[in-house]
Amino acid sequence: MREGIDEKGTVSISDLLHRAGAEAFGPAILVLALLSMVPYASMFTGAGLMVLGWGMFVGGAGVWLPKWLLRQRMQGRHVLASLGKLERCLLWLSPRPGTNRPVSPRLIGALVAWTAFLLALPLPIPFNNILPAVGLMLLGMAVVERRPVLVGLGALFSVGGLLYFLLAGQVAWSALVRFL
Image (tube, rainbow, N blue to C red; front, top):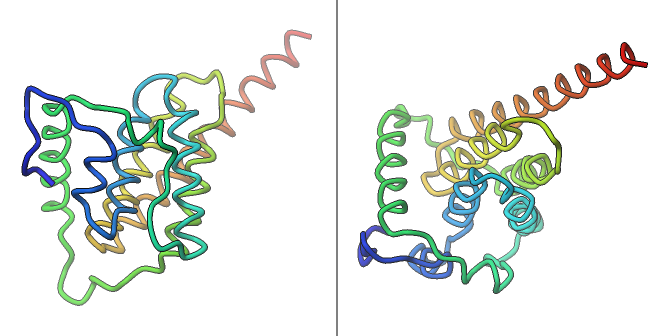
C-alpha cells in the first residue's frame, strides 16, 4: 500500500481501498478506525464502520461506503507514518507456528459492527473514542494479516470500551442522585 503515496501530498480513502485490492474490508476498517481518533469524527466513521461490519457479517462481496466518505483525503505523511507503526506492531504480534488459523468473517463483522456502534455513541465522556477505535484497528489488522490473536485483542478493547462507558454512566448516575 505504500507505493505511490506522496509524503507531501494527500491520498483519498478511495485510493487506499483501491490499493488494497479485492479484500479491502481490513484496510477500510483500519482507515476508518484511524480517522475515528479525530475528536468528533467518531460518530460519522462509526456509522461507516457499522456498514462495513454488517457487510462482513452477511457475507458481502466487497466494501461499500458512501461516496462522501470515499472522497475524504488524508496527508500522505500521516498515512505513511501510520503504516510504519502498523508494520512494527505486526512484527511484534507475529504468529507462532500453527496459530495462524482463519477466523470467521462473520465473527469479525459482528465485532466490528458492535464496536462501531459503541464508537458512534455521542456520549459526553472524555476519550470515549480511544478504546473502541484501538479495538477496531486491531480487528482491521486481523483481517489484513489473518491473525486470530488480533481478533482476541480487538474484542478485549471492545469490551474495555463498553466497561468504560458503563463505569462512566454509573459515576454520572451516582453524582446525579447525590445532587438531587
